Length: 146
Image (cartoon, rainbow, N blue to C red; front, side, top):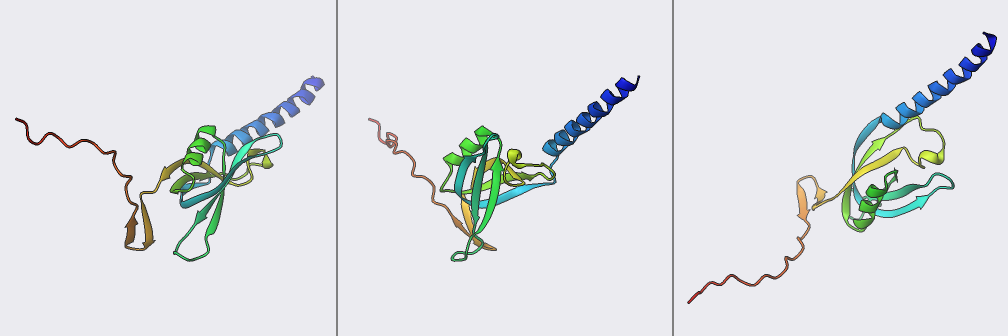
């Protein structure tokens, strides 16, 4: 009976640790979007590889950009971010609190989605539309048929 007690205590502690990590990974403290230009994205880590990046946020033209550092766990999301590098994008992120160690990434901000911004807001009410890509030239419809 005494041996069971000594086995039960470590099993309960391991179970609590597993529940804590499961909760910390699946629960987000906050989420939102940040817009700017991705200026750095690299895969880092000794044992656990994560994508670590940097988004330049510019509030006013000519001002010093603020940097938003982020982590990506998902390879598909990292590929999407790599494809839109150099374009103005909005990154959807979740902030996770309580994940110990660097195996989960260097930041608390985990990017889960990306989309290209079609317009640039210079100030409240002042929006500069980004020119659309030129359409492929198509032959004009036959206007005069004999």
